Each structure stands twice: as structure tokens, then as C-alpha cells.
Image 1: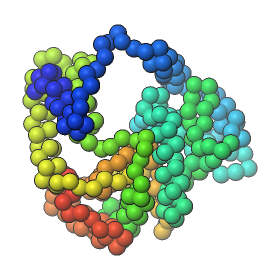
Image 2: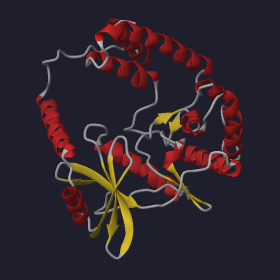
Image 3: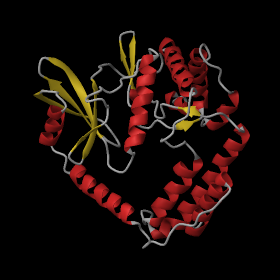
Image 4: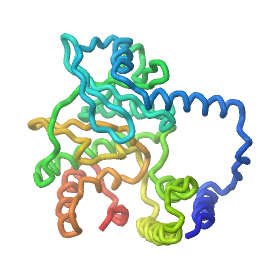
Length: 311
């Protein structure tokens, strides 16, 4: 698959999905509003790259959280997340959002979904409301603040816990199918596949001498992925957690907390199940069986979606 082939394939999928093709404008054809938006993003990115502890503490103080000096950086791939001690109160978790990844509307929609799940007694950790909103601005930074919930990683060999997780996923999906997202995208081959390949090639992240090999592997991979979707057929889509892996589930005794809906998108239900599977097919089969035993206590599972889970 050449660079041209990768771009053409992505374009073909876009045309098939929408029925139309709008060619991109020339590189130098950028509106004034777009230039202003790009400038704002660049400034925010520079500030984000230089985010310092005093910026974090100041942002929390502006929201009425009086920090006591305890400060812990938490693991996060996309954003910057910190646990902070609060005077005469429980610790909180502050998330500073990476510029350019999500719009304000998309972040607020994630927060609304979290609040909707919490209102249905699903144990998600949703952000605090301050000044009538869950998304806050401090200088160039956007942030949210949530309660701190402790716990350990789930024991993936515990079948009782596996069934409990299956039930929780089903309950999330029951809420998720009530209405669609308006501002958050879908899980699809176009955005996670073709666009990702185009980005790597266009920005020359792949050494030139490996281009042909890389493109050939991607071409073979996409053919097989598309065949999986063809076998699955027209499966339903709903609002998902999106990144439901063991690291986003905290277990404290019999209590389970679900965190980090930052990757919430629309897609098939299987997206929230497969990341709890590990090992080869022989090991994954009983794990999935136990998850689905819990899941189907609350919601039916379309068996065609098994074609979308790695064998």
C-alpha cells in the first residue's frame, strides 16, 4: 500500500459512508477563524507543555479547593492528572486536558454521560460541579476536578468479580443506548486505521526504507479488519466507556469504582468487553464466557460482535 493508496482508500471509505466527496482546500487556504483557533491551540499547547505545580495549585484554589501541599502525579497517557490533598477534606483528582484533543462540547458531553451513569447508581467517578459546570478554564488550561477513590486493580482470575464487571458493563450500555453522542466520534476503521496510517506517513515518522514494508502490512491488516466487520454485519452502536480495561476499574473490598471516560465514543458493545481478556484463545474463551454471564443478566449481547474480538 503506497502513500497514495492509503489516502485513496481512506477517501473511498469516506465517500461510501457519506455518499459525497468534498475535496480538501489548498494548504494555504485557511480562514481567519481557523487561523485564530490554531493560534489559540498553539499557545495552549506551549502552556500545557510548561504546566507547573504552582499553575495546578492556583487553578484548584480558583475553584475553592484549598490544597494542603500533598501532590501526586497519576498515570495518564493523554492528559495530565494529579491527586491533591485538601485542607480539612478528602483528596481530589485534577485532570488537565491536552489541548486540541477534544472540544469543550465533547468534554462536557463525557461529563454529562458520567453524571447520567452515576444517577443510575452505576459506580463511576464523575467530576464535581463548580460554578454551574464541570469543565473549568484557568488561563490556557482546561481542567476538571473529581473525588479521589482508592482501590486496587481487579483480580482477572476471580470469576465472581468478572461477572460483576460484566453486569456493570451491561448497565453502562443500557444507559448508553438511550441516546447517541452529539459531539463525540465513533470507533471505526477510518479514524483508528486509515487516518492513523496517513498521519504517520505524511509526517515521515516511518523511515523511508521501511515505507513499502509498513504499507504492505497495513494493507493486509485493513483487509482482514474489514473482513471481520463484514462477517459481523450491521451491528448496533451505542455510547461506550471506550477504554474499559483493568486499569480503569478500582476494587475496594466489595466496592468497584469505574474511572476515566475520557475515551468515550460510540461503537459496538464488544469494545467495552475485549480489553478484559488476556492470553491466547484458550485462555480468553472462559474469561469472555464469565463476563457475558454477568452481562446478559442485564442486557442481551449480539453474538455477531464476537467477530470483532481478537481470536
